[in-house]
Length: 288
Image (cartoon, rainbow, N blue to C red):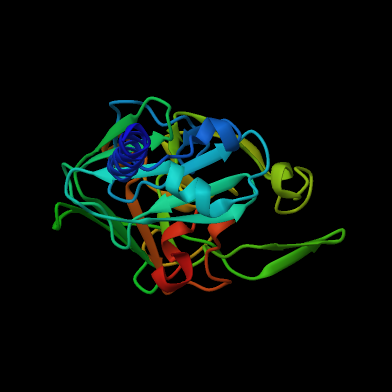
């Protein structure tokens, strides 16, 4: 009789253990257990500010301290949530860097939260819908705020063609594609030697430029240049930047925030590449 009671008690304990096992939450791998430390920036390299406000084309960049072997695990650990329910995807640039964006631009007012595994979440806000279209066919930059045209600015874009300096072939096109505002400076020192064109060459330069809004990692800006006012709206004369008169450059400088969209259309040269800040030029089917 005692043996039967003992067997019953053992059986009962096994059943209870199985029930408890089924009810327990699944184990979750923590990012800091298996992944290198990570920090978040915009495509400019500037740290994403908790509580900051950014444009509708903002891309989250995750920088890992070391190489990531299991990118699928990293995708799961780096959770991104939006207040509007918009979903997106991580796109791996290399084994230490991943970019996140949704299929389309964010809606204004969206709150975006990125959580690095067990670490504290970081949230930022999406501001007004700023989209500027620089059309090389018309030599005009049309600026829209919330879908409404608010300014038309004559411009002089890249003169086109190439020039070989040493073993480097330099392009003078303003490449077509979808850019975003990276940052802005007033003034900024523009130095052609930084991309391989010596200052003392016939096309070289080093000068201080006012009201400069940067849209590519290799130095394309919308900026003031009154010396080309005669060409703005009719002739391309620049090395690749978009020249504006003082009033328009000042207005655009004050209007712009990081993440605003700038689309360049009908220009020559190679299409904008991801490494140049061309995340939105990558079709969604190739991104996700």
